Image (cartoon, rainbow, N blue to C red):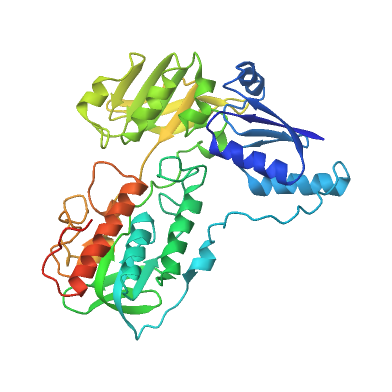
Length: 421
């Protein structure tokens, strides 16, 4: 039996499906939609407007769905339609990123005085933990939900230097595993409140009170609440999140794009090479991190609609994208849409547990200097809890490194941070 896999050049998840098929000795025909546009029309006949799309065992599997692929494979093997794959010969392989349950513990000794407690286990927190642990400090990382951060839920990461074709969870697991190998301890627990004034600071968690000499707040920002009604049902059937993967499906169509940060401008530029018309909706007056000159350079086919929000995504009787309900400054409208691309970032910074001990700005972000120090002695911040124009994992990791280096300076009693190369 031969599978048919529809792909797009540069699609990281397409690569993962090809690896799955090869590992299980399943023959397949690859159809790259950027090489042969006719395959776009072929997918459209089935109401599919996204890749990867795998036709396997008389079933369509849209997107990277490893559990679904395994279930279909097991059913075909059980029915005798295909033979079970023989065990592959052992060969050296790259070490896989450790799973969350291999990194995080559920309890720690609450009688211990830690040198550094990092609140948040994302790229900023993992980087801070690595630097703090390597400096010889007893380091504890606390994270209430390790698998739900902005990086952890990223479907693919292609803009982190030295890393290609991985999911956000895989990259984050590697970062956390690196810090753990240097001696950092990762605790899964919710932080309830804190007392950060004084030489010995207290972090109250669901598993007890943690004492420490220095704190690095790297709790990130809360992701947007839930999906837009209709979004989940239409993923891969008109709703997409990746212009590189699915831009070719928009050829000649009127497209709606909904985004709140500068990332969307790169995606729109890619879509403009295919789409006939693009309506770019932003929930506020401005795109976070976008310079005025960038907006001025938008392609002619793009029209910007500030203060517009998508209320609901509509479907056709056949199960495809039917349009969108839009909340405008003057009321509610229903727009037709040949495709919808969503690029919504996180929400408010996760600083509610801090109370009024550490200064926050009007939006709840921690106030820090260029060395990631807050006005409270021994308290530092990194990543999305501080206000920055651009939110990227690589920048958060750099913040974490700086915060840990400054925390090391503080713990060793040095008055100021000297230049390091």
